[in-house]
Image (cartoon, rainbow, N blue to C red; front, side, top):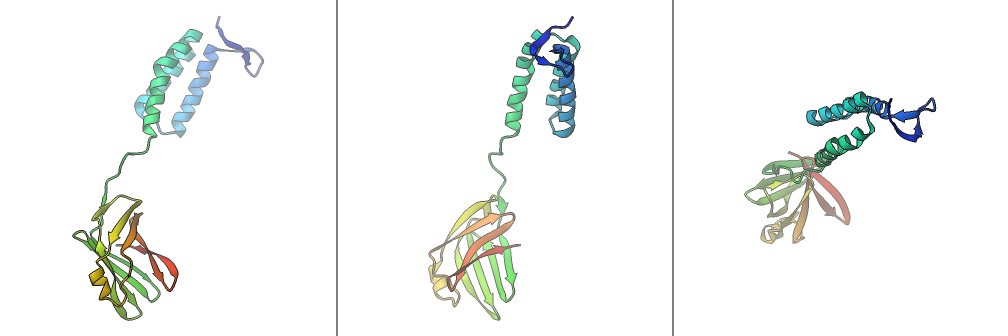
Length: 190
């Protein structure tokens, strides 16, 4: 005879659900979850063993014991698996970058801890930005560049800002370009 888990948990026919029934239902649910959710092999085997023991023995006291033995470590492992990685590998930003739309072009080069950005409007090309720059960044990182004001003062298109923020996102370098009071997000690509 099987021991009921709780008399308040009726099966569809109205009879109390037994530990054996609960174990078999657990087997079905776990089998479905394993088919739908990717789980490491060790966790999958622990879940299957737990469900099989509950389904075979049908003993209520086994449920409490096995829950502590199997489910607590599984919960801890799953919590660790879903945590966001602490850091990602930085991307090397050195090299040439460009942007082009209609009659406006930007060409940039990152090298030796500096960046130079040239602006071409129609057929006229000039230095727009020159300043410090990090050679590496992780995705989503903002890089603040301090201006080389001496170089920018000599240029027709030179920015008057003392610093400019760049953002490295999805393999692109972004910065705001302001002309005549209008801001435009420039996305430089390799």
